[in-house]
Amino acid sequence: MPFSYDFLALAAAACWAVSSLLSASAARHLGAFAYSRWRMFCVSLMLWAAAMVTGGWASLSTPALGVMAASGLIGIFIGDTALYAAMNRLGPRRASVLFATHALFSVVLGFALFDERIGAQALAGGVLLVGGVMTAIFFGKHGNETHAWEQDNGSLWPGIALGLLSALCQSVATLMVKPVMEGNVDPVAASAVRMTTAFAAHMALLWCGLAVAKPLQRINWPVFGMVALNAFLAMGVGMTLILLALRYGEVGMVAMLSSVSPVLVLPLLWLIMKRRPASGAWVGALVTVIGTAMIVTR
Image (cartoon, rainbow, N blue to C red; front, side, top):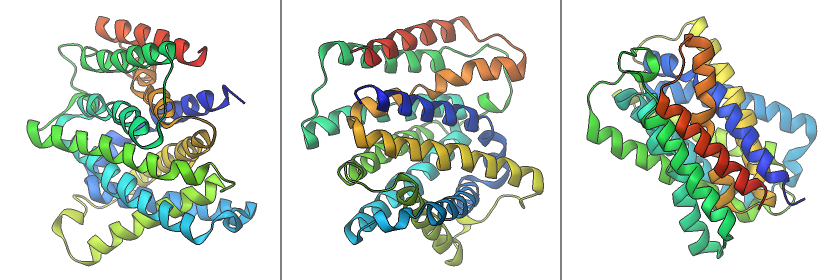
C-alpha cells in the first residue's frame, strides 16, 4: 500500500487544523498546563473505551507499553504543554511556524537513526511543503488583525524556545514509536497508553502543588466542550491516524505531510472570521500544495 500512509498523515493534519481553532481561547482561559491536563483526561477516557470495545489491549506487549509510555511523556506531556505555553506567549500563528520545524527534525533524525533515505522528488517536495507552511503562517497576517490567533504577550525568546522544544519533542516521540508500530500493535490502544501516561504526569504536578499546574481560571461548560471536542479530533483521531501512518511510512514523510495543518487552517479562518487571508498566505498555500503533490506522486 504505497500511498495509503500519505493520506493518513494528511487526514491527521486536517483533524489538527479543525481542532486548533478550538484551542486558542480555551488554552488562554485555563493556562497551558490545566488545558493540557483536561484535554488528556477527556481523550484518555475516549481511547480506553474504544480499545476495550475493539480488544486492542491484547496487542500490547510489556516492551511496547514502556515505549508508548515514554513517548507520551516526551511528545504529549512535555511537547504539547510547551506548544500551548508558546501559543500563550507568541500567539498560535507564530507558535505554529516554530512547531512546523518538527518535520525537519524528523527528517534528520529519521536518516540518522533509521537510515531513511528520501528520493529527489520527495525531498524537493518536502522542502517546498515546509517552506510553504512557514510562508503561509509567517506572512499570512493582515496588519490590523486582533483575534485570538494573533494575540501575544510580548515574551519573545521564551516563546521561541518553547516552540522549538515542542517541535523537537514531537519528532523524538514519533521516532520512538516507529519500530513498535511496524508490528501488529493496535493504534487506538497505543494512543490510550500515551495519553494516559501524559495525564498521570500532569496530575502528579498538580498534586505536588506546583503553581504553574493550577488553572488560571475555573473551567466552565463552554470551555469544557471546546476542550473535549479538541481532544477527540486532535488526540483521539489525529494522533491515532499518525500512529497508523507510521506503520507503513517513513518518519520524515509522515512528519512533513502532517505539518500542513497550519495551511489548512487558513480557509477555516476565512470562513469563521469572514476575512480573506493575506497575500503571503496564498503564496505559502500554493507552494505547500505543490510540495504535497510532489510527495504523494513520488
